[in-house]
Image 1 (spheres, rainbow, N blue to C red):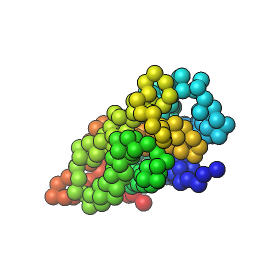
Image 2 (tube, one colour):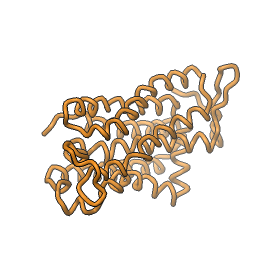
Image 3 (cartoon, one colour):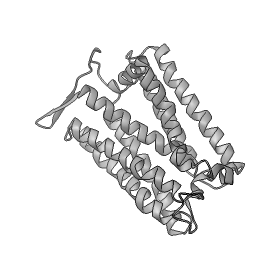
Image 4 (cartoon, rainbow, N blue to C red):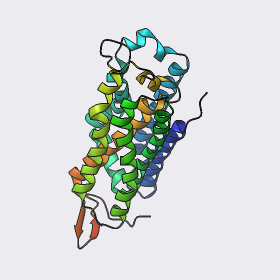
Length: 259
């Protein structure tokens, strides 16, 4: 088994989401019953990650039958769908997420995106000939740059020198650099009718364990977090700036001192 930071990155994402949910309960922004909805989602994501990892280890993802399914076009969307379905069909779930974000310092979400700096790993693999160079140029390097930008944006948020629109646009960029080129380019490097890039290493390495955790769980979840924060900013427009001083208005909830 190859050593990788990806299982730890996935664990960090789960711990972060569970921690801010628990914090919302502790601050009385959220009822324990509502928090269970989030915890169940985290369990579902964990089960998917375990199942996907087992399939990769057993070699299913390296089979002709799997490639015939054009997995590059849809597999990265599985965790996105798991998160989106309850968001779309349940107003209670949306309200729960809104309450959690309401009482969570925004710069925490920005620093979370700094996990993308782990893309240094794929840069190293590319330089050593173990990762497709076209994927690194189109996705890996932009993802790495975005990860480093999170350190700068987080400071802007904590110093109140960036507006809600700027922060929303930054999050949408973080999602766009993955969603727009991602799935099509991955599929173009896999065996099948859409394959364009066939010189080894191909995109098939993305479906080997532990690297499979990146396109099927970690990266999609970071994109989901981008979209969630952007949705909240556009919905509440709760961050206003005047003379470089920001105030956060907790809509429909009593204002509490953040801890």
